[in-house]
Length: 304
Image (cartoon, rainbow, N blue to C red; front, top):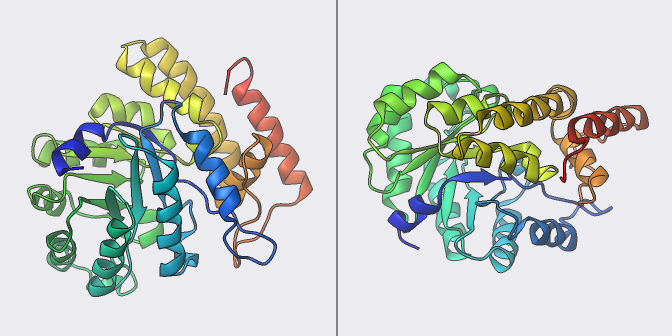
């Protein structure tokens, strides 16, 4: 798939799929494959593997690449497989990115280096992304998630990178519409913005974003797709009604409980979630009951 073809299909809803683990703490490949099979051919644009919801910081490089292999075997074009490959070292990021592409990733999603955050001036970050993008045969998507990295990327730097022929898009997870709007205003025409915050999903689409990578799409993909499709059809009343339901899930599931909450919701919705990998901890029975109640309220009357 060429970059032009990739950009054509980079619209809609992507679940940042979780990584299920077995009782030994190893990847449960059967559970991972089972989830992916349920995500195919239901209206999703593809999947993101080894991202934040996939517990990427707690995966080895070998594990990330194995997830890409499994995803590519299940998810067929034109549905996309995007792989999280961001590491703190430029050379290491490029190596992992090349290997992910070799195993079938249509594109890679790259976090900015953050360990030495005080040294990460815009010109250093720009050089990092350029080196990785220059060395790849597939597109690189910039990944902005300041709540995890500890800093926001500057729109002016993103604008410069948007003119790189191999950087056609970014995922932005701050949830700040003003920031998203500034990016869309400064970047080149046809540069794509994917939203990583469910709170900002509908407003971001109105601002010009092409879609979202939403943790809630792991367990209620049809709800997320419904918002996107209603927006595309200019049915804003329906889109806003569904967005309100999504807001409930952010407030009561993913917001307070993070990855562990996503995995509980997956289990409750008939997918395979299981426990997170240490040091993250599983949730207790009382919290699970509250999540079940939130799902029931948010999904009442919906075919999700």
